[in-house]
Image 1 (spheres, rainbow, N blue to C red):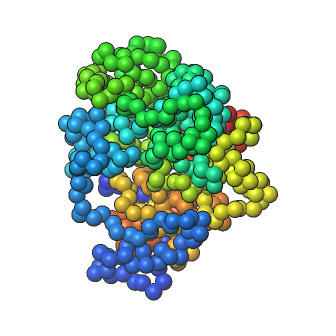
Image 2 (cartoon, rainbow, N blue to C red):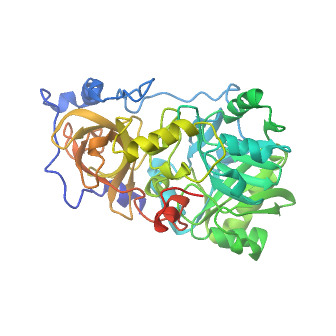
Image 3 (tube, rainbow, N blue to C red):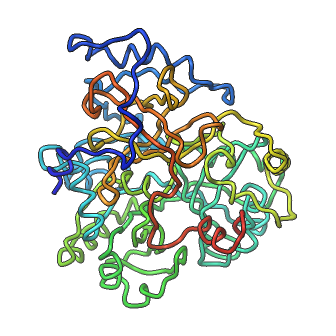
Length: 472
């Protein structure tokens, strides 16, 4: 099935003509190796005036560079176990090596891992989701001050997806927040150093809390058979665990916290192992043994599936210069929260501008479907986007992948706000391995995010269904 994905051709149901070429450049076969450098010469036309530090849009393509494994970057408690499971490539996330591939390209690559996710059950080493504990008498008040949503509405043994913003409204991190007890929260963080920032905040505020990274490392158990596997590990009580619900448990005698959460939009869970440095092998081996009858497969985080679910990747899709109103996270800015929080004044001012019909920013994130051959691996560059008539680039793609369910390439991209309307035709400059014709942009059109429903509707979708533009 994976090889079929790799050879199948895709396109839009109603494509925009054939695509466009950059004026004054007519490639021949001899030009193909330097095509993306030529395209990159036009990337200055992309308006990045919203940003203090522009995104590097030069197109370098895959490079023959080997990752250096050294003591400068941390190895998680599961690192050697991932290597045993076949990990052959990795990236760095929260100063820790992060597995990004187990199945080799000749064996189906990332799309074979995708098939395991949507048909069976998978385990991911996500120890890079470091846990920052906030604990003490003022824990709730401190957390309520640093997140935009209302921490007082999170009951013990419940969680929420949240964002933390700076005073300019930029998104510093988008963690899953777990309330372990009345006086204890864990921030399961995305890829930025949230501990140092929160410690800095508290120097000036003096909340009675301790803030520290703790020795807790999660794995994700994702896929349609995840509930059955988890029931074998924890008993039938786990079947009643609600979305973002938490429970305590043990695996092979090791203490864990379980949540029904994940990075896929599929049914899934996370197992947070306490004292992970001591117990990683014992828990990992127990999960593998229990998973044999369910066809458990160790895979890398499924970015192909998270894109379809509209889940953002901090540092790839968004960062500290991104306002939630630019990236489909406006629902994270509350209307009923009376308590102050960092960024509140700026975020409410931006919302007032938008409601008055004025955009206080130039660019916005959109979903798009695009033509070309199936994109079956990570993009090494931010591929450039041109307008309906082609010509100079106006934006860039952050997260592209092929969706087998939809039968088309899908992507998240940044474009000027005037191109945000659903159905707007655009053109995307793909590298020649994915382009229908080398040197010719493929047709694309703006579409809604998420691209397909998830097993559990997220807070944004629930708010929409209830006529609200904000989450509680």
